Image (cartoon, rainbow, N blue to C red):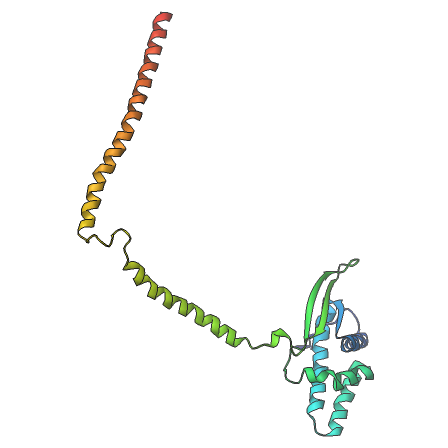
Length: 220
């Protein structure tokens, strides 16, 4: 039974797959980034990260024999001594302070011809923006809404305490009296405006009625 033994098969045999991974690792270590299919990039990521872990162990080891042992394990998988030497001697310093996230995959769209999904896999630099400390920014974002709510609460009473209808020279008792005096004047103005319109409508209706009566009499 092969429970919990899922791997990226890539449609090839085991020896073919290990050779393919070795070539991809060599190219990635040599150039820093390579373009390949998404499925191959996803299969390459866990393999190259294990090789980087071997390089980190070799750097931390104090015994020369242990360092050589880790280097030989990497050479057996990568199958290129020059690429392993570059990783163990030059590139390992970028990964010593990190516990993962050594690679990044970008999607590039479909390849012309067979429409295979293409991708770009690359090493993530230690000075990348993704490794900046984010918890402090999140804490600042959480505090900002609370401060805004406090400011709004302090501003609301000030707005309520300044009524716009009351003038400084008027007392609060005079304001309702003025409003009550204004209402009848407004109603009278509305009625006066409506009366001419009603009269004109009635006259027009009467004229139309007279014309219809005259026309019926002539026909008779």
